[in-house]
Image 1 (tube, rainbow, N blue to C red):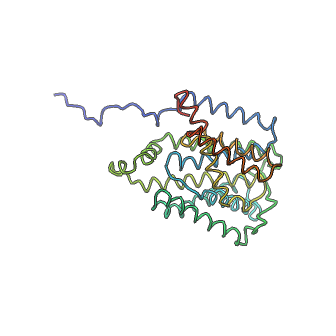
Image 2: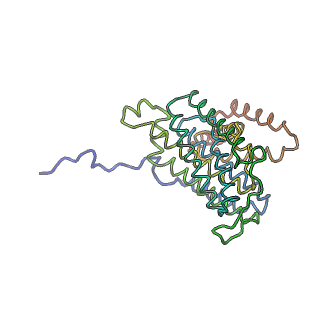
Image 3: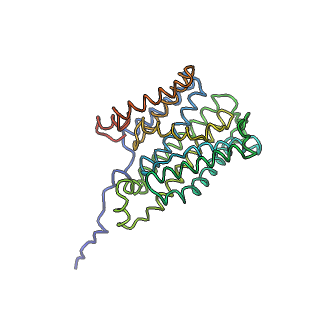
Length: 327
């Protein structure tokens, strides 16, 4: 006698979030890779490396805010904290650049676990204020700790040799290493977003009480994405320290947390490629308008106001709405 099939035995189509990478996204990633390979021959390699580092930083922050729904005002703690650890590991411990960056990433993950365990107990503006408070604690620690160099920071950080073989002193050699690190970081973020874990995050962002009613332990998911975001932000900061051979208080100051928020909102919160564009716009402004001094900050403020008024979904968010395809 034939048995009735259980609903659990019925094959289900793959959800949009867990299916393979759409062709449009593959084309965009391929285009970005081609631009990345050409860029050092057209532009100053150090400038492009700075854009890459901040693009990864913004995407890591967007993972927390755009997909986890958690607004942090303290992400400079992981970005700058990792830069100090990476610089110290390269200069004092003599580690190669890849190991120094891994050390910075690990330190950022541990710091994110410690802060996130407490911060996720609050929601909304209270969560944001807790993260800001902890970030300021990291800043004052960086001012006082003996290994950070105080206001002078850690200078003359050696770039070393990749795997002990390839010298990273030439800018182009280091550039392609940075391009590889950032590319891997972006692909990791993309995979997280389009995994079952990422779908749960979006559910928590949109309706946390419903996800709790379905049996999900939302705090664990929040803590997991917080640590992942902190670790990837740390990767960006650690890489930047090797590029500029410097770790300074600028990277842990609260304005750095504000800049990454601006990059994310300008490019498009909750989009995959928006933070990359936002980071490129802000870093380009800072680089080419540096001669105007503090007026650059005013320019950033004006751009932010215009973006909020005209492009509430961010530049890439508006484009995605126009073409009716997720970006």
